[in-house]
Image 1 (cartoon, rainbow over the protein chains, first blue to last red):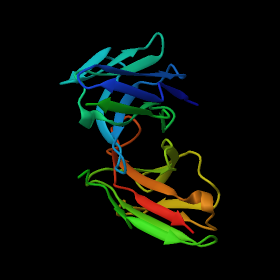
Image 2: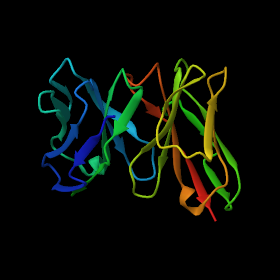
Image 3: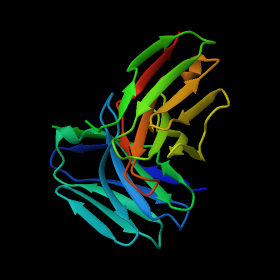
Length: 112
Length: 113
């Protein structure tokens, strides 16, 4: 089955800097890659997703890139703000396995 | 508000007991997923239902079971509870399946004493 690895497990940046979180997946058939943000004590919320027919997607300060050949995808947050502090989860799925696998999460801390 | 409703918000019980967690998906969503999140841990996929039928199974213990009813709400039953079952249990729903964004409820925090 699919296996998703996420790095780093913790990330600390200064306000205004950029943050990058990387995930790798094992199953080349995976074609849907969402990212979720979970603030302390709250539910995970979808922040951006990408499908395998595109290489990059951007939404304001957030972007996701996908490299299908290398089987990895990354979340980029620019001009970070303290409210970006949260745990971020990547995930991967494909229509054949009826399953979405999540990475272990990255705890991002943005220092003011 | 995600549109996914989970009840109860908190549940405190003792070892050996049985509890039922309930989830109402967003209007129009056919798939329901259950996840377990222990303290400072990731999301462990338990089980998925689609339009009343079990569709995928993850790391769900035999002591746990779930079902999705004709009105599409779902229940997760946890029995013979152990201390290690203390966790946050999330329900999520999506329009159809794993190729659609999942929308999470606020979770049920289960504490086993």
